[in-house]
Length: 70
Image (cartoon, rainbow, N blue to C red; front, side, top):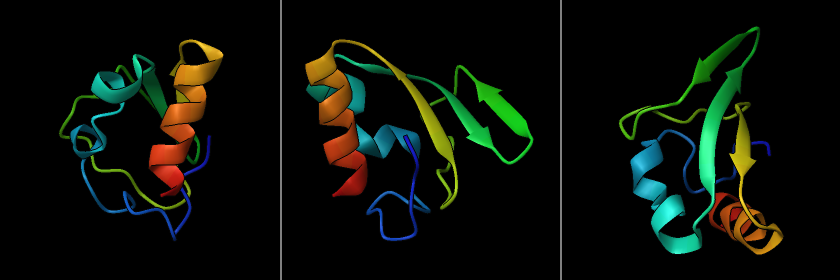
């Protein structure tokens, strides 16, 4: 799922989303241009244009999308 410039988490740390705690879904990678941050740490700063790779239930993934889009 994309992180847009209007995301409340663009420029903030991944851990600030509390995505796993709130949804049970996991962000397992951040695709940034031609590079991939596999198993990103909670202190990884999300940037507009990043694409998050999320695994979990349909509900969990939808929850992460809701968090990321605000």
